[in-house]
Length: 434
Ligand SMILES: Cc1ncc(COP(=O)(O)O)c(C=O)c1O
Image 1 (cartoon, rainbow, N blue to C red):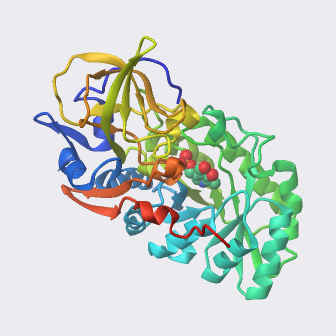
Image 2 (tube, rainbow, N blue to C red):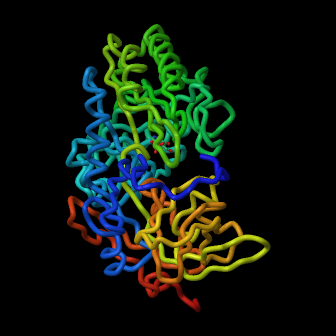
Image 3 (cartoon, protein in one colour):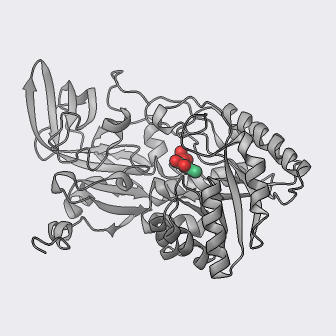
């Protein structure tokens, strides 16, 4: 995840190209069979592009690897909530993992069967829980006794049974950026192991609730399957303890999301490696395995197209100012995340070491630091790779900048799934007086 090591622009045969479905034809970069320059000319920049073929490839690889056991894949909508992306995943047979009323509305709008929706999330309001119960969603994952009490009141009022899970904090430390490690003690996520049995017994007080899932999510951008195995062992121990305590209703083991991808030169676990580590633990338990991948399904399927505005030389540094900023892609400034930058049209210019920075009024507004890139000038475009997950969904209107367009590319065809925001949309609901 870290920034700082110099890396040349990915060569044409870079594995990153295959990950994203990119190829150079002549000097021009193509994505999912479509020329990036043609899309940028038509749609403008900054623009997010998603390659449907890559999403399908990722889903099928994971689904096939898990085939030896009963399983469900619930796509973590938070990674990329674009309706067209959701529809692609729904059509592949994915369920949806949501964390808000907004994501519930999106999942339903994209056509997910309510039954296939899992409501996770560390804090859920009464309104959100009510909407979920009224929609008839498949599972609600509890995070606390207060949430159980609220859900109990809501199901009694609505008169609809709901299956629940308990999201456990298994106290497993995953090797990832501290902001996205979620399985260790002392953080806000999940129910500590020693509080799970009392919470499970309390679920039984509510006749319309059935505890059927034990869940965890230990972190994001995980490269190694071993922390999953450690977490699963702890969850299985808990299932045994629950049985001993008289709770014999557990049917599913939800191991969360977190499967990492290659942003630079990482060696993420393959679906086969994950499967060979975790399936032996689950096989024979009689439980259905549930995964909630986000980044793995969509991360490499996305690029952010941006245009160079100017260059500056200051304090011994070369700076390339582009039209995409931290409001469009916050990962570099928020996590110091690395995204590969590639020139869209090969210009054959001499390379220079540069920082790529946005137009936002923050010194922390950068997309890349200390990169060796061809000397691009105003009007030339850069593709930012690995932008399909936690890209547009984390975009903001800071500096009153409209959020970018979102485009879907599918086997050479492309369409604007979400137009760039118009300026008037940014303030049309504001009132200047009472
Ligand atoms: C409960 C839960 N499931 C799934 C995910 C998806 O994680 P990833 O995109 O790393 O697969 C997250 C991410 O925060 C999460 O909190």
